[in-house]
Image (cartoon, rainbow, N blue to C red; front, top):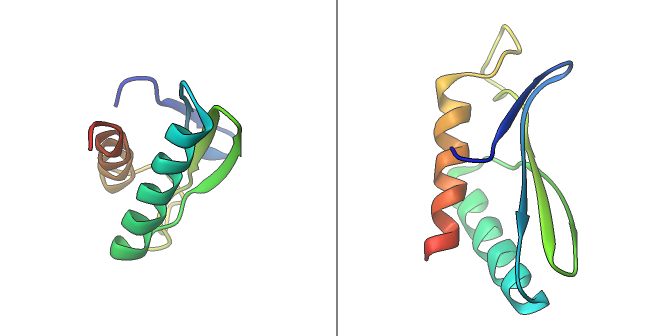
Length: 84
């Protein structure tokens, strides 16, 4: 989970991914889209030509609205998309 920041108001995990080209950014976003569909979990995404900002909010099953172990695991899985 290197590079992820946990914020408290509102509770979320955030990370900025930077890429060397628009093509690499697109490849990451495509992989993230496929992965999100597969696990039915959708982070907030904003992006530009060479970056993508990802925000993970507490999962819908989380009654306390706090970042959970499952949220951290989801972030770790997103990190792994870079190496594919």
